[in-house]
Length: 43
Image 1: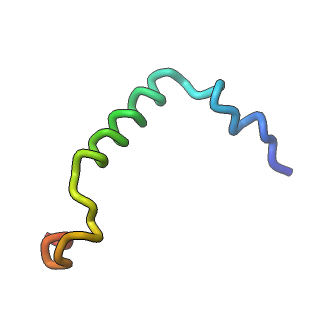
Image 2: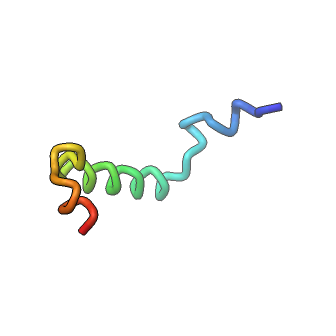
């Protein structure tokens, strides 16, 4: 059985939230990989 309380956003550690926000921002700043030539994505 899955304990849904484990997935409550209020229980996320502040440091984890900060790190996730940094990762999301870094990915958002990059070009969409689907718009790039495959050779460039693989490089």
